[in-house]
Length: 201
Image 1 (tube, rainbow, N blue to C red):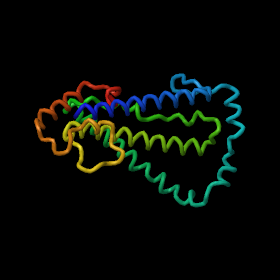
Image 2: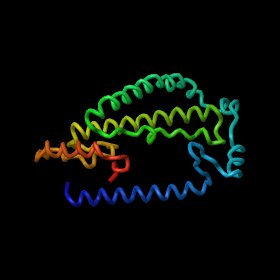
Image 3: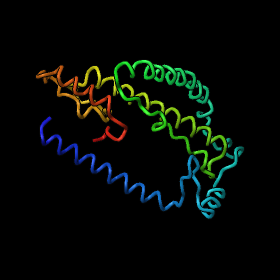
Image 4: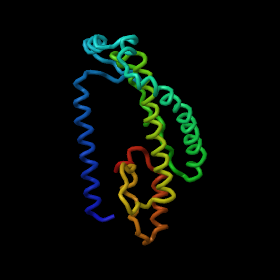
């Protein structure tokens, strides 16, 4: 990878870090603290949240009819999601030690905290927890798959792909066959000793 590409990637990383800092500053104005697994809002904020909370019966009365029809489909996906979770977790547990790939920390991807929001009723909280699980699972599985791709085939595609995983930008250029197997071994060695903070470097 040439120096100009490295410079652009470094600029992208710097901008992402700056954006993260600005978002954190904006969220700080909402005045909440994280204590262990609990999110605690200031008393005045929590009271304001309770005032806008919609009761379950009123919420049901305002739900669009088509949402009721699709509920069995949406929640029916829980079964394949859990099976997928079990299989991808088993794959990582069984194969990553053999490949000497550092395991993906599950806790980094599953963030379930909407139940602490006082302005959501119990049904809304259940919906949020389900979505958070599904999104977390897909992020977790994506990183497991990305590490697997880095181990076996860290080569970019000829065509541009949308929403590539974070590792993809460092893969070998399509058609670059020079010292291919030596370079792949370097990618594999990096997988054995990295931690989660190394991904976006």
